[in-house]
Length: 221
Image (tube, rainbow, N blue to C red):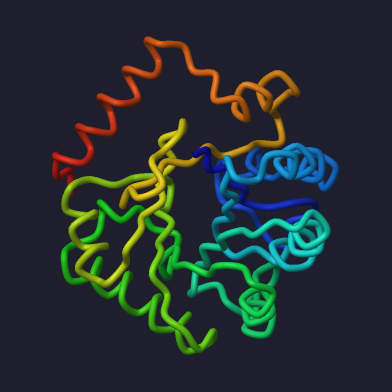
């Protein structure tokens, strides 16, 4: 299974964070990728991070047109702000059959937080989304893909059943930790095709596996 991750589509309509701009794709790039995914939807999962307005205004209609379902990981501290989803749009995503998940409150790397702040980040964001959607929120998208053993324990303890990282490559459907590959606006067609076909050189695949194992066992914060 391959998970493709998007951050924003088209005009951000807000000030971007440092180094965020390359992760925004054009509507045309997004539609081209979804058209390919729709040919073999069982092999892919589609996710979105941050809770940008384009999740609803641009992505949702295209997903519906292609009969696809996606996961949206929302920063609850941005709900209702310029360029970000509001409560009505979050409900609309849920009512359209999309899966909502937490990306935390602020866009903070979770390993940098102390135990109490991390627990609050996970639990408070989850509670806010459950209040908006009216159902359980069980999945989390890890900000910046940064995690360690302590973060994964905290995610489990907060009641999440799935954590999505940014390690790239494929994953097993029943895994708790599921890697994703973020698509960027500066990627060419060959780059995108390599991701969609999961073409990873053997040495790079080995290094990825080692890196993920290290992060699952180490505590960096």
